[in-house]
Image 1 (cartoon, rainbow, N blue to C red):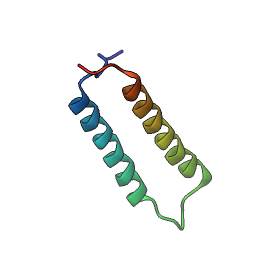
Image 2: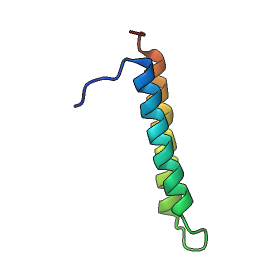
Image 3: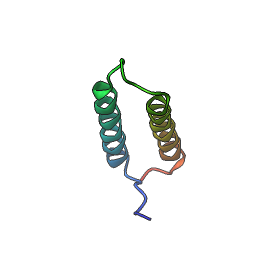
Image 4: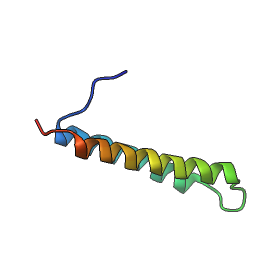
Length: 62
């Protein structure tokens, strides 16, 4: 596994990058052809992002 990110600036950068990826995926979805699996993946991405935010909040600051 990778090294834990404990620096708050790095954590914010990481979360911004993940959110940008999510927004790009969301923007690329065609509502006419979107399937349930696509929606499930978006929900999973948001759940993963929320989990990472919680992990960062629980870590001590450097």
